[in-house]
Image (cartoon, rainbow, N blue to C red):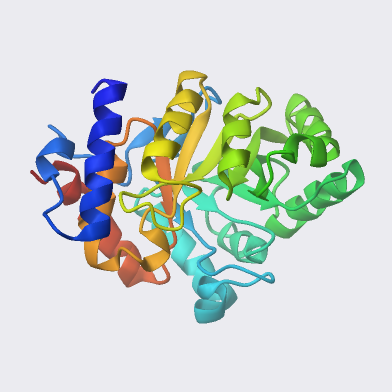
Length: 291
């Protein structure tokens, strides 16, 4: 699909989801072959192989807790992470803010480290803060190497200046093999545009859904920025695929939109229990070919 045509179709789908005045145009997004949560894709130019679906652990994540940790506890979240890996969902989307490092460590007691990709996020700004976080994160998770480390929740276009110290430490850590890739998660359109223009960013975690719900800007504004990231070889991970729950009545539409998107390598959704995880795994192939 050509970029201009994709942007046009994305705008149509967004309007349909927001207004509910007409049916989602499934025929525009239907794949010729089923896509699954377990499909293995490469995250940009990082060389890191990931499952199309990531296991999110930070629904309403704040203050080192989330719906997952509050609802399931240490063993429950660990069991959910294991269940995902057993079913081919091989990426754990963690963050210091969510408090889910100990849960991953518990899961690693029975999951081989080379069977899972670990992504986590930091609020560090200075070199000292970042060095301390890297040491603590690895201890908390129980691993020598972190696959992807993101600067968490960029809300300013000046983030490269504000986070220069942390960025330098992450660059050094990648050179030494302590981490495999670095980047940012964005919660501001200016920050997102700067992420697209910044060579340091290997991976971006970006908000995208057909309704424009809880996004950095409108769908029409965000899509060209993410397309630019893709052209430059950055790995683009979608988040807020279900609009932080606003699209619960349109789950299949939102999944089909994400699955068809040429600007996303993969996406993260935070199932809160095994039933929700199983439901996602069943819905994704059907949604991908729905015409």
